[in-house]
View 1 (cartoon, helix red, strand yellow):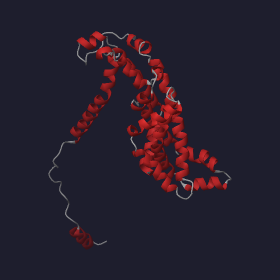
View 2 (spheres, rainbow, N blue to C red; view 1 turned 90 degrees about the vertical axis):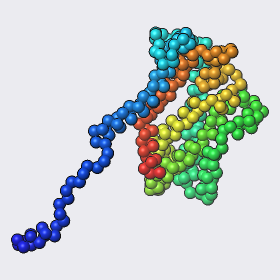
View 3 (cartoon, one colour; view 1 turned 180 degrees about the vertical axis):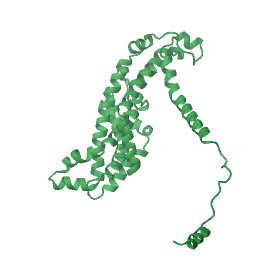
View 4 (cartoon, rainbow, N blue to C red; view 1 turned 45 degrees about the vertical axis):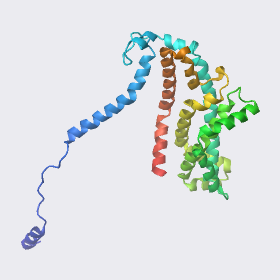
Length: 301
């Protein structure tokens, strides 16, 4: 390459860009500390209510009435928890909630997964219309079906048991479950089901051996969603509970209201703390599977 060529190339090259004036805005260090401060504020907003309820469960009734709400307890005895368990029947309420929540979740997941597989993976005429009909149930609010359901349960003689709650929770949770699980089944490659069929597997084997393992994280996500929906429900449980010994946790919390509107704050906070800790344990135990399920749904759905 000659000197003339280098000179021509240098002459044709664009002039070097000089750094202009600094862009308006905050320095990177300031933005970093602002983000950290915002995260700290969000953490305080999220954690402080739980801390406030936990600290309130150790206070006496006099502290609630005579001291500010944000004051800390002077002692850390478990009298309020004992009162909540004995006088407030919290143990019976927790047992009733478990007896309602566990069968409801199992039925919702089993029926929802089977229906989603049949409506999304299996090929048969009219399956799209049936899927739309099932998903339309999401738009039916629970408030408008309580009175007809109560009449049906009363005529069938089911009002003195927990079956009305289980049946209602299953029926109300199935549309959303079918919709979500059908989305997860849609992301599963069809070649896997075809290979299962070529190996001689029937519909049930392909569903159990291929379909369910592939949407495992989706099942955890739906299970957690339905668990919170069933465990924290008050409206349906309050409507169909005709006996105090069948009250769930949310209904049992109303028992801490005494005559003339007086409230036993210490036992009430202890009962709420026990309920919150139970739900936190369930969430933390399957947190990773839920995050994977949400990520899979956001990427493939």
